[in-house]
Length: 129
Image (tube, rainbow, N blue to C red; front, side):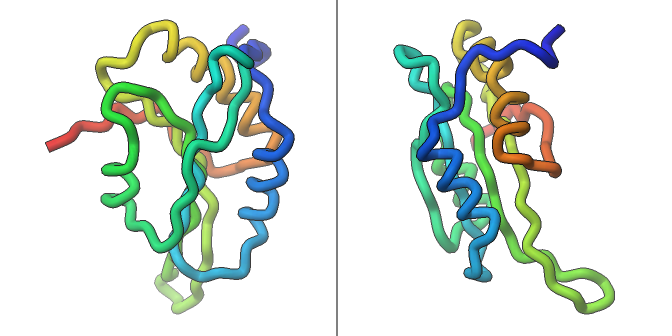
């Protein structure tokens, strides 16, 4: 049942930005952070980051609010090849309001399908030092 649940649609400008991000030419680590506009029931852009490490990205996320992240990073293979995977991350830290968690969980599959992401990481509960 949760596979077909759609709580929020995805903003058209965000869809275009994510498609452009997928085919970017830059070779640095970069991220697009998305949030839900509760009033419009729409997944929208929150922030964009260039040259950001996973640790710095974690520090950019709100402590008690869920977010969707698309992250592109440089990956050096054992055989010397370099690739730039695009990963989808659903962040739902401990302490989020249940209503928010439900909106994000119910919108995740629609977002993943809309922007055709293949590397999806499950919900993460980020612990801060």
